Amino acid sequence: MRLTKKAAALVLASSMAVSLTACGGGTTETTAAPETTAATEAAADTTAAAEEAAEAAAEVTGKDPSEIKVGISIYQYADNFMTLYRNELQTYLVDELGLTASNIMMQDGKNDQAEQMNQIRNFITAGVDVMILNLVQASSAPDVTNLCNEAGIPVVYINREPDAEEEQRWVDEGIKATYVGADARQSGTFQGEIIAAQENMGDTNGDGVVKYVMIQGDPENVDAQYRTENSVKALQDAGAQVEQLVIQRGDWDQTKGQEIAANALTQFGTDIDVIFSNNDAMALGAVQAIQAAGRTVNEDIYIVGVDALAEVVELIQNNQFTGTVFNDFIGQSHTAADLALEYVNGGEVENVNMVDYVKVTTENAAEILEMVK
Ligand code: BGC
Image (cartoon, rainbow, N blue to C red; front, top):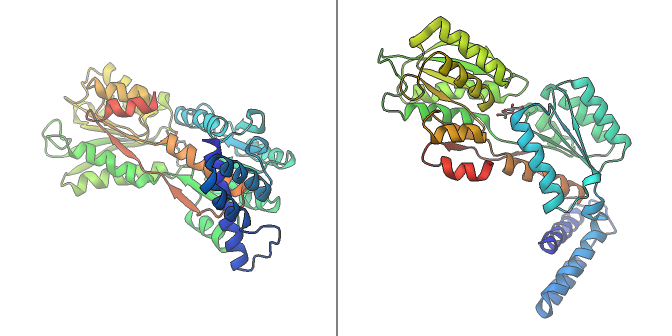
């Protein structure tokens, strides 16, 4: 497996050499020769060729994976979803890509942009080869990008997407920065479709209008805005009449989700047909409030979230939660790690890289649970 990856790195490095030469990139130390040599030997002895390819790749890139240093900062360790994400990222970097654990510097941004800036400066001082950053404030991307670019360090942003103008600047100015995430519009649409697929299209009390509560994430992540807009839009597109009773920020947090839902249930009682939550953590809080209010999910109220936390998927299996959307932390973390290494190996990386969401209902809950547990 390792050999295959190194061989792949060679192909990448060789084609880079070709494209650099073709566009007059001015590199003199690389040629396409190692690939030709490896290919010839492959006919006689595949294993030997792969080994030679691996060595040649190391020569071309100058970095063995076990020596690559990565600086990672996560906006907040206390976040449920980002905990799954960072654990998967660490495991993948070490077990699959061959990095040395002590070369992975992972830090908790503690939801404090100033603290995270210090961590980034420390990564630069420590001479990391690449950074993987989950910004506290997506709006600080231009400053962070410039800092890293001046230090000659490529950056892979994850989870909190910088705005489109900034992403375009990376292309225009040839800056080694990229974003890996998922298009939150898709997750919102899936939430709306899950409600629209119910027999009564979400209108539990039959008054002709789907009245809903919207629990929002921290707006620093554009996912909050996109999920809010697109969930309701999908339900309307399916033909439902809708009315918003409450919209409030729960900052992705379970306790806040519980408080918002409890207050809404006290104020609006059985008028509420649906609770939309921008993520599962807040929805888990809302489920506690629903139970405390004596309401029954999928009978007199619906609830949808996003992420597919194992706890939520189990509730779906037990008919205690309407549906969620799998936010593929496995695909996202692997892509982020792969692209980080691609940068270190001198490869070209697209500025935006999106991983698909998956709708989760009783039909596929077991399958999804296998993946997330
Ligand atoms: C996830 C949330 C998480 C947030 C952090 C979102 O994509 O759905 O659960 O709290 O990212 O930025």
